[in-house]
Length: 568
Image (cartoon, rainbow, N blue to C red; front, side, top):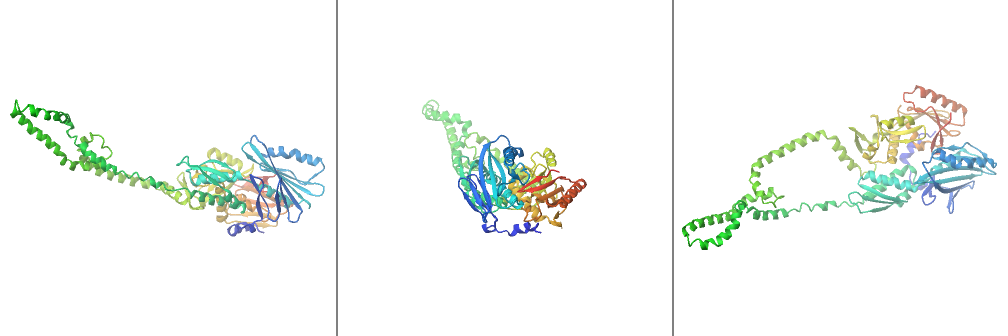
């Protein structure tokens, strides 16, 4: 049937424009949209597109309005609910039910000679809601395929602000030294925390241009590529700060040291200062009254002169002294400690032995931490290194061991009470996704995300690829009833493989209906056949009751890119 063809395509998929079904166009100055490549597109006052066979005409209108709070299902119902009712009062026939959720609202009407497919989505930017309204007028009768086409076009709208934000997050995760100052359009201003004041401006036009020419599957890869390129331009000439070892002025200080060392006579320094006065005058006066006594004093003077010559012997002591006391040559009192170093010298030989023993004992005890810390920076420059890891609670987390895990929303809320910084993503009001380290039962947190040098988008892409590459999956097929068969743990996780859930891969009649009653049961069928619907309802109810890890007893319907809970 083609359900598993997707996994084969991703490894050999061509990325040139000709192989892409849709092409991305600028919708306005802040957003882009995907349109079939063979459609003719014009963008004047309004964005217009026309199919190659002239049967379909697409119009997209953008507006904005003040917004308090968040964009929710109620927001869309208030926005378009009355309009849809008015349309019916004017005589137009509703061809399907109104579909409203936290992402968009849609409905289809039969007008005079054509079918109108309506789709409205919105994006919150600061305190405003940017609203995009799509109307596709088709000359043929109502078609589920066209309805899904309109939903896909509507959900393909991307905002430049989101791209720039994701890019900024990637820069920071790749280099924590980066600080983003501001973003505007495709322009980002940032700086290095270690070099404040040097503001860098990067333009993401080329990165976004490449993204527009490739599928959304490659968004994370493109951001990674250009973020790495930008960070490689950071100058790495900080070793110039090595002039510090140019402390050869130290030997100059020892030259002054001997002059300071001469103050050995500081004990007799006062005499030395008085002696020049005594030596200058007394020799003239003293020889007259008591020449013999003065002669006895004169030999003392030469003794003092011998002390002056003493520095000739002292330089021997001074040479080792300056080597050990370069840092404190200014203080004359240092000489008093000069005799002590030789006594402590043998002790100085012993301490080096002690420090050598202590680090040897500490290093083995901390092997796991330094290894992870040393490996991380080495792996970081590699764009998609699967061996990058982080240590969390004594457990080494490797990239290739991260998997997505689909669970009930209430279960995730309870888990968040135990793990406040739990990493999770909502699929809808009933289901959510957490990220698990395979075979360890450890849920990833925000701290683990930073340690792995990933952002949320890259993490999801990595986890999905691990799921596809490492989990063997098969399909039990009974007509238009399908059961996903994997390893008994990750069947439900295939819900997050967004590109799987299309009519190209699952050719059922009506819309795609999914049942995910437990972690190891994933059921698929179409909405058009009542017998198929009874089959999936019965299987879901039974598996939900019997499962050790129940997820949901509801059915879900694929609408565009959204998984919508069905009313039972």
